[in-house]
Image (cartoon, rainbow, N blue to C red; front, side):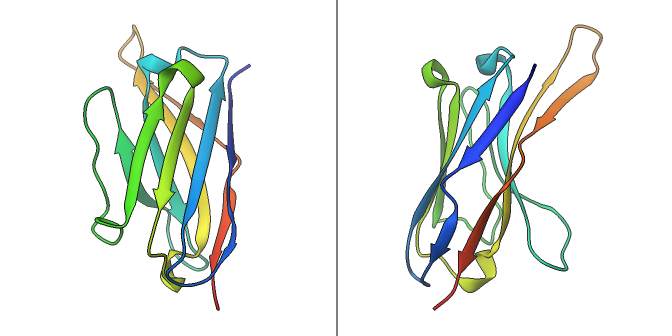
Length: 119
């Protein structure tokens, strides 16, 4: 079955760094666009950064601080988070999506990993 498993979350002080990882299995990883989303307490889910085969993008709130990357040989997508702020506190989710042969959107989600930025 399809799985996306995030890791790397934890507690960090403001200004610190974390690297999140998401390992996919059960699907052809390289055929999917990958994204990191987050959901902070009391707020709606937010797209943080997507990556496909040749491009990346970032939410304005994280641009210049976060970097998304992927290693298809390891079926892994990463989110390097630097200069962390308290407002980055959220559950971070890994997402994979593609358009299938019937032009339907296929989408998978990880279980999430908690990131807490606090002094």
